[in-house]
Length: 278
Image (tube, rainbow, N blue to C red; front, side, top):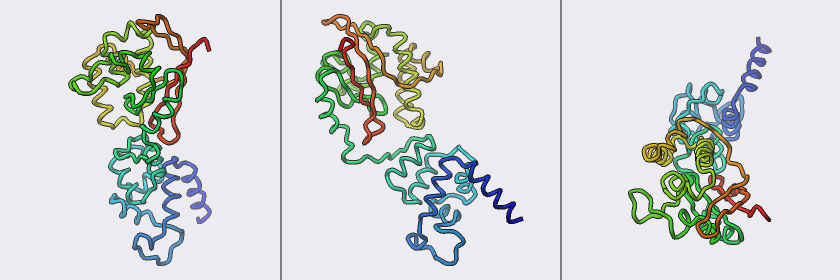
């Protein structure tokens, strides 16, 4: 019988999801005395599942199912409770939410990861370069980008709908709500539909984010083209490649796009456009 139990335990361990393995390893590293729990006699290091469940304010059965990988329907509130109960570090909390495919409502940000600090990097690039946040709002760009994207990042940018004091820097709002975008972006119909598919893939782990939900709802209401592309459920990775534009002063412009993610701020995307003839 003991041999059979060991076999079952091994099978359970091999079937656990990465989230369960992470929680088990974190629980094993915790010391009862750090949580004012009696040390007593313990068969294994760390805390018991029942103790972790109590610290997190959730039922022992529910926590056990999560650790054993028997459920993937874990709410943001439960993940927040687990992160607080286990006293997870910044990196551990981020891993918890990312592994669970959920958006952290209080995503921590390091001081050296301030998007504005990346402006120095963007300005050092001699070709058009800009940074998008997780909602695809432009948070930094250089002069060549403002000169190329006159109606989005330059002086000709429209105001955000419903807010006359804020410039319209969201990429999707520009592409679908600015009447000048189809003439500027070569092959606008295909490029715009691809952008929606890339946005869906890029923000899948932020599906519960209210800002994302509001943006999608607004664009579906305001743009039949966006609504149709969104309902198509098309999913594509955000890749580089040739991008062509019809500039009002320079005529046809062709670039090769490169998209990078800063290590210090993984929810940002740095896009650099290199002239195709370089």
